Amino acid sequence: MAIRSARDFGAAIRNRRKQLGYTQGELAEMCDVGIMFVSQLENGKPTAQLDKAIRVANMVGLDIALQERR
Image (tube, rainbow, N blue to C red):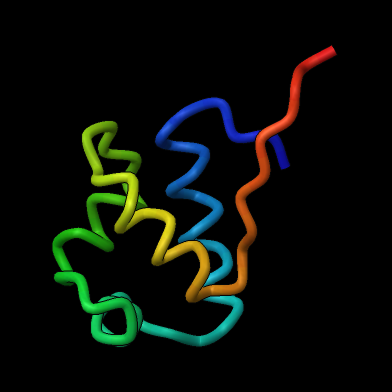
């Protein structure tokens, strides 16, 4: 899946969280972040903190890889 925006990233996190059966609260607790952060991340808030966003992605089993576009 190509991530081109904060909204795309958030949608990927939300979809994976739901596949795993976690609530936003459960995911927030596992990642040591607030529920508000998870909500804003899933809704594509563009100012989400990158380190926290990566932590959440890793917790739901998503790897982030950067590659050159062709």
